[in-house]
Image (tube, rainbow, N blue to C red; front, side, top):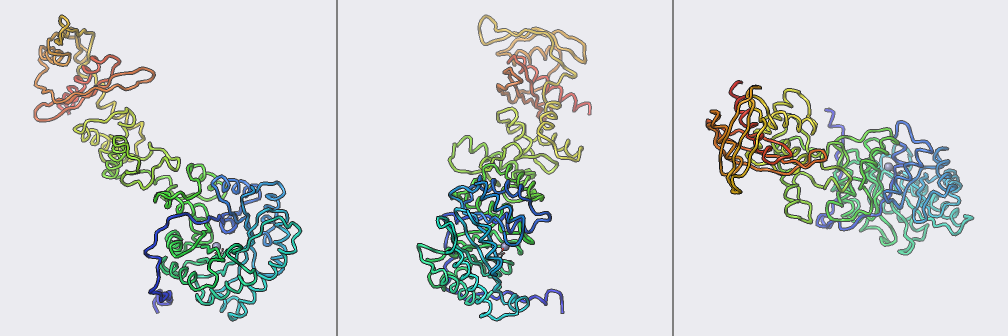
Length: 558
Ligand code: KIV
Ligand code: ZN
């Protein structure tokens, strides 16, 4: 037998009448965080009480109204934590704390002690129902498993009626644990029996949680299970159908989304998908997927970095760099064509004032999760001209001429190839300045004047330039300062340059406003760009011209 032959394929559900494939998600589910229970029980070092309090406060800030806080009958820390929340009044009036217990009498009794004094509680109990667990763990038939659930339900009902604090709101949740491995008619039967005990009505519904305790099949089959369950159960309107997907096959998010299409009302999951084995479904991804479809998820992830930092600290676990929406690299493009398209997208957004998000390669605006635009483009040897130009445009605050892009891209690629590392924005600007801006060798602008002749547009340049440090006087006339300067250069035999293009931009250099000029000259069939910066507009143009000529001279030497 080959290795893979020992696995039995998951049995599909015969369900040609399924309706979920043509549905759309139009509203968020009821969210329930299980970070402090399912997430916590999967940690190498579970959280202590103080850490749990900090996590609880974070969940409140995000906007959760239902929070599973632990399994108080199974651990002293979880018991102490719940008591701390209740005794220190840390649970807001509109928030339900959820506690988990197995459907076993002594654990149920201890759970009731733990919740005494809480205003809003969801009492969540479970037992395993799957074919495999019945066979290898419990060694019971279906009747025996129903008996465990019903006895647990009866005890919970009885204890809740006997509670001292009658003002408290107590709701019930039942999970047929290992639901995905359970025969669907049996899952329906056991849940109906539990609902009968609680006499559920549409005004007094209970939560029926259908966990993919182990994710065993493709998400469409999970959706079929959910739709089958919802359409075959009695009193559907007296139940809140909840999903609790785990991520064994890496498709928990898809399973949750399809499960919502199939009729579920509620989702249990964790931040960043921490949880047993490969984790629980990631609520952040689910919520932000909805956000990017124009749906308000009702949870606030507008400062995702802070949330990530806190969760990493408390879970003592890193969030992957490529984790959807939150990973360090998810708003970064290294590839040249992606960088170019993103840059154009940002330009388009600015020019068109579009109210909609229309930037290629970025499904969400980084600003919506409190991330910055700056690190969107990072420069390494894979990057093209678009990325480098984007960085310069962000730095100087204007759009660079298109014809200049290839020269800039070539320079930055050579630099990152030579260094073998990613370049910071600062390095990109500094290499650009070193190679294009205010180049002083061999030609450097010296003392000069350039004034209008008798108030006309014509100008006269009069002054000197240094050639390899040696001063030379020069003089020229022209229909404007640039023309006059070219004429003066001609008089020294610096000629043969054809003027192609010129532009000037106001930039701020430190506290001063300065002028940045870009000139494009043509000589011997090749274009040379030069950039000049000065507080004086004419001087900025002359420096740009000399920078372009100096680039030509340098290339000649090399
Ligand atoms: O994954 C699971 O089935 C659970 C139950 C206890 C709901 O965590
Ligand atoms: Zn679970």
